[in-house]
Image 1 (cartoon, rainbow, N blue to C red):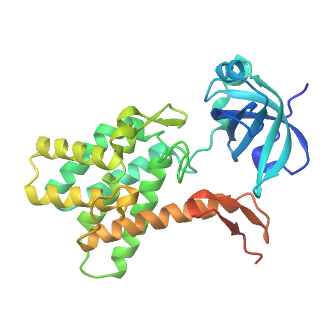
Image 2 (image 1 turned 90 degrees about the vertical axis):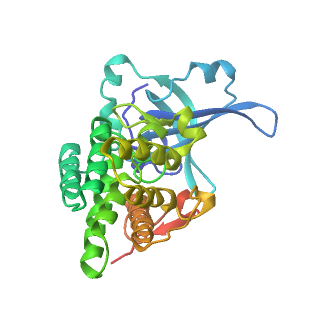
Length: 317
């Protein structure tokens, strides 16, 4: 069997394909007829696709290794308006092919060191020395891992360098918004943008390919609580005032806006409100563009979970 490596973005209903994909997840389940099967998610540089390995058992499940390349032969089906693979054969790729796994990982479109340098330039614009010192310290503590960490395991910016890319685009948007409206404290906005998600490094455990899983601490606490704890330590080191620390903590705890999304408080000053909406705008832009990047004009995407399972339309203009 020759594996020609059909990319996920090129999958078409009804075809039988050979592909080379990263195994992102696998779960052993029982069907309605009481037979076991494996529910699988594969990914490559162009996207993700779910797959079913029918009649697979416990030994098959134990044989799989997450975050490795697999050679796959499968039929492309459709289930609930989304493409899905029905596996005929799956085989762990050889060591030579495993060495090329970086070519199969989606990455931010900008160079990591360039993004980090620009983020530092925004931090340098913070005029309040206490706020600037806290932000600089937190950046320095996370610098090495920032170069490759994703912003999420599977949602927006779940790509290598995704956390840097998310922060940078938010900073650019924040600067544009602050140029339109008078009376906004740019120190707080820039600081909030830079630090609000830094505890994703810790909430997630990622390798240098940007392939991540939730850590035990991340599952038990989450990046909002972890972010406040890390901020508290940084504030003590630089000797930041109580007022500065309270404002920055509030920006972290309120940036998800709703309790069901992890925020115990809604924003209670303008800059915290802006942080939430800037965060949401960048996440939404990413999700819409990601859903339509491989579509032709006039086509609808598969349902997008993060957008309430809406099928997104690519305008035919």
